[in-house]
Image (cartoon, rainbow, N blue to C red; front, side, top):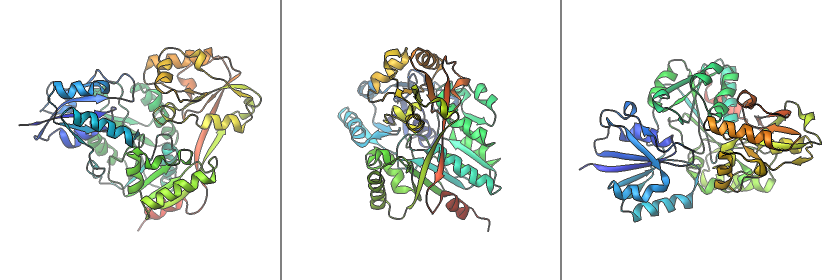
Length: 439
């Protein structure tokens, strides 16, 4: 008799685990997925075109809130936990719900679902959302490009739309973002890579994505999402740490796994963290992975028109996931507001529109900032309406994209950028060059 399986996820790792292990495995029958963290991704189906011949009707996706009922109603034998950036304690609460409902609870081994590439792979992951993975992966791309390598980035999945149209996505021009109807969250990851003249892939089926990427790459850079583990087995495994959340590297799944597996541990944001925070992170790395090479880095914050900020009442728009499941109260926008002498941060709460009210209700610890939520067209409209309703002098936008491509604002907008910068030796550049030096 087949074991009935439920896969808990958030439209990413869950689909990958299914594709790699469960899709053709005749020991199991996957009866459904559950979805959490990302708005409006439940109520869909994992389509039959991606499921293979064993699932001609596709596989339904339900809300995580119905977990107990789904286990009992479907006679589920095994629940596979497949999403990231969640407290260890919460993982075990989920496990308790599952086991009390009569099913087994499983987390797949980190290396178990890593695909083997035919080209060298540099993996850039983190211990929490918002540590600075993307700026670090771009620095890796820059170094490899300067070595004359053909570099292709593959980004952790963000398939929030029609899954049948997102199997393999290739981005090399801004027109590709329109073609694939990308959300703000997707654009934040893809636009900066396109600006470097590089190619970035994403999608749903990471076996097929790898096949396509290998056709045009000398080296592949895996750009992780949240604090998930790599989908490809890396030749160089880099993990980024955030001392502003010192101790989180020991308290979140699967960030601690990343810490224990990494070859290179980058302590980022050294320029804005305290020495005690940095020391705590360093000690935790040494106690958990004594062989890891530790690199110190700054997250260099700059503003295109910093003079517009001085003395002004400002609304700060920050990267959405960093504030929500990343649990940061602020990001680079607030750092820039302080650096350039803003008079006051204006609280957006009195002006929230539509879905943004729900965001603040779900994540009440967000600070006096506005998360750039944009998982769909309505959220983008709500973001625009909220920004325009706030009584401020200037808007500071600290998302990695030019947000004015998507929203029209009625106040001056200052775009903030943040880039990787080595602080001390050894540098990330020296490590990458040594790893991939020619014969």
